[in-house]
Length: 397
Image (cartoon, rainbow, N blue to C red; front, side, top):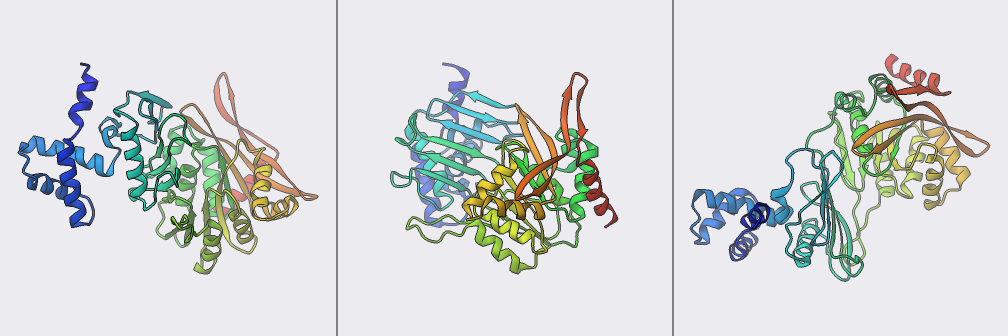
């Protein structure tokens, strides 16, 4: 028997003990803690000794609140994603690209049970009537699960972990995400009240960069965050957040991002920030930024050049014509910051300004990342001087 298989088996907890502890915790109610688990283990009558009790507590906690048998295999630092593609196919990423690892699951029943528990911890249901569910758990994990037969290869679970530590502006430079010069200009423009649109693909670093920029906002500002899943955590003294709510099992109770943007206008915000504009909320954000408010948002886009088309598509979901989107966006947005991901490396690719002409939205590059044999650096574009003017306005402020 391999060492890995032995480790997997040794990490598993006695099912009978697990069930006893589970029932004890449910009967008492309240938050699951190591101390409560240890008391329930001792009360069960199982004689484990100090070392055995500690192992049981860790294993039971993983089964009740973590990722079950996978929990003990996870790297301690840098973990961003875990993907379980059925019982035999497990991957994770910890900063160096996706890595396939041996599966600790005995069968799809274990994967399904884990998926149901993770979804239930966020107050939602995962079953035949609701086979595809996306939630954020109480400890901040974003979990998406799909059951067969919608999934053709067993139960699918995708987990994204929130950074334990806030990424600073120094971290962005040290990691090569952006040069010190461009970052300094972005920070100055943000502090001066520039309206930002941060774009890129999934995992490109949009939230990370926006977090760092918002942390540089003046301390006398009141920042209101509006998100589908709470991920933004800027280091700023006055931040309030609102999170959208999905409909319950009866199909009622949903609160959409667009409604939250409207609500934020009554909260005397100095800066309104919408994470992940995906639909009609882009109309509300553009309207707010055209009526004296300062703010920012993130949008999924394949490239900076694709942003006008992407905004037009999102605006259409909110009942806006492409001309209306161009007029609103051209007036509301000062800077577009596009990020890209190549393998494990995330980099700011383009800083651009939006211009509206004859009802059409155009991108004008301020700078873009150029890679050559001697390395990578930012090449100035036709809107470079306008970018400098925005930064200077912030520096004067």
